[in-house]
Length: 111
Length: 115
Image (cartoon, rainbow over the protein chains, first blue to last red):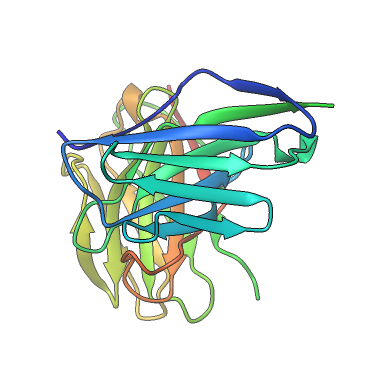
């Protein structure tokens, strides 16, 4: 079955460092991937969309890469801050397909 | 502009009962999608409505149903509740169909507990 997999273990990093989260997909080739942020008790908030031919996309301190050979997307937060602590979700958007989300990776940034 | 609103925010029901959840999308948004989020399964797509028509459907039993009204507001219904239906139910709206180009805006969710 088609899956999006994210590291279920929480990522703990020190303030100011770069956080890198991984999203792997299996059994299909999405043309797009999205990244969302979710805080406890709240709905996800859209951050970035990357197309398969873009390889890399940036927005302020955020950077997303898309490697179709490895079937992987990496999500980077540079100069991380405690306020960046949240769960980050990777998703294959809908359209012709059923939207599929990874289970998310919890990021904890320590001051 | 007001965000996506969902009512009620919290709900407690018993097995066998039915429940109706409501979602009001952002003004001007015509697509509404529903998701179920649980610790074990993560965020799973239920269905999407666009202009009062169901456009896409996830792999959930027929006990889960929905509809959309002419003002784009949407409701989802779960009949014959089971313990496993306890979850956070999220609604998301977007301008057009929730395709690859469209950012989805999520509501705060309805926390359903089935006893």
